[in-house]
Amino acid sequence: MSKAIFQTEIIELGDQVEAFFEEGMFVLFGENVPDTLKDFCHFIDVKKVDGTIKQGDKLVIDKSEFLITAVGDIAQSNLETLGHLTVVFSGAKEAGLPGSICVEAKPMPKLIVGSKIAIVED
Image (cartoon, rainbow, N blue to C red; front, side, top):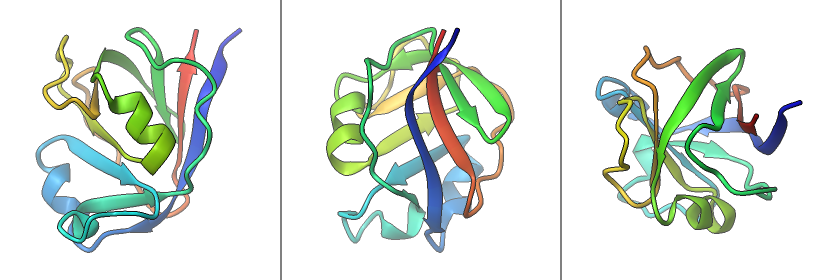
């Protein structure tokens, strides 16, 4: 039985989220977004993380599942405190950014207001 350790939904989109879409990544943020990042973020309700995010867990976006291949050192604490997480669709075994997670290199789904995001452990 899989358990969701994090669930939220997109409540607003920055004006330039497309810029990162082409690079195969997206940025989630809660309320306290630095002005420099505001246009590039997908805004979420900050929710509690119930468990530890780790390699082998799954990122679920709406109905699509992506295997998590790497977790940055501060990805979890950023998500818990700021609602901030960068998700990179690279399949990398090591996170290039400490606040990011990498998932398998599949086409990235388009996130819209109301898109549901979850991190699920098996």
